[in-house]
Image (cartoon, rainbow, N blue to C red; front, side):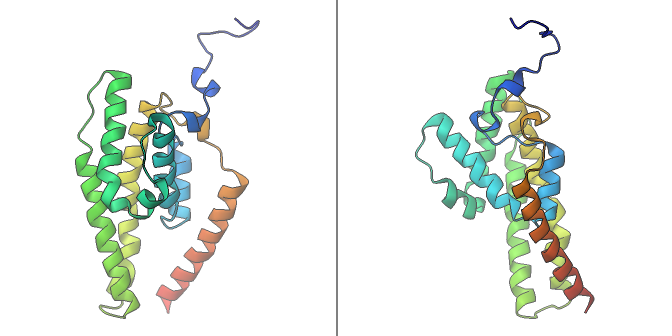
Length: 188
């Protein structure tokens, strides 16, 4: 026992590195800032980190890069693995995550179809707005899974990964520039 440390107030989670928890742990605030600030591109990294951490913990032969790029085919599996770990770690049952995964898949597909239609100027200007309007729904589905993963990894608030890094700020700057271009294009 360390001198001067009160064990009742000591945060045990702070001693655990975020990338050694089985799934990617991130605070809700940081998750939302990065997701919205990058127009959802952060989700690629999010899926990659979750599959990469899962692979490190279990030794399963999964390809994190492929599973992040083709997330719609693997999101149900990932969310179920998060739920299983949550149940194992807490001893409590959780809500079924299949609905969240299905919502993610459907909204993701609708968003991509509307992007393609907008690119071909079909249904303009409505198809231009659809993807932006659907972004919060995708964010919500992944956010709910993130909350489950945080609890399953013993860091409900994501305290081990709650600060923006220099690289995060770089991605946010690029995302901000893209946001400006999109909003400027929509006003024309």
